[in-house]
Length: 165
Image (cartoon, rainbow, N blue to C red; front, side, top):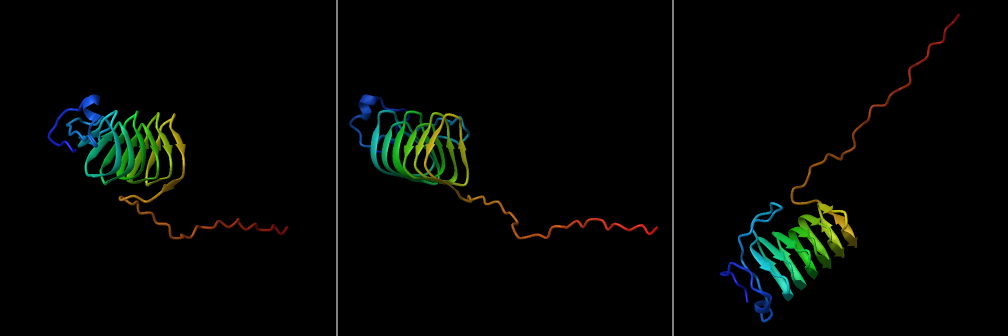
């Protein structure tokens, strides 16, 4: 079911008989988020709940839930119908469902997002389709802002002296 010892992706014909295909890799992510811990390949369909730590890339189809404090990478051909809770989400595919991110959500073209997003940071490239609600929350690294009322100096107009003359 879970393949931790295999170091390369299975071919599509090998994936068809699998319930879940997660492949461990040592690929460095171009966006600087670290190494990919597991991979759900193109052509793989998964129904259920995924819970993990680290970075996972999904290029297949997923229906269910995803829970992690780590990074979720969604490839351009991925179709996700799920409730997602993650640390950081980087999406180029299609998400239908509610998304909660502790750190950030990055929607990159040609991503399609249908559902609500709750995150302290949202970035969206030109070409992304976003249909849903957005709630900006304060993240784990809360910025302290002094919002207490402060007196503002009031300028009084100069007093004009009358000339007696």
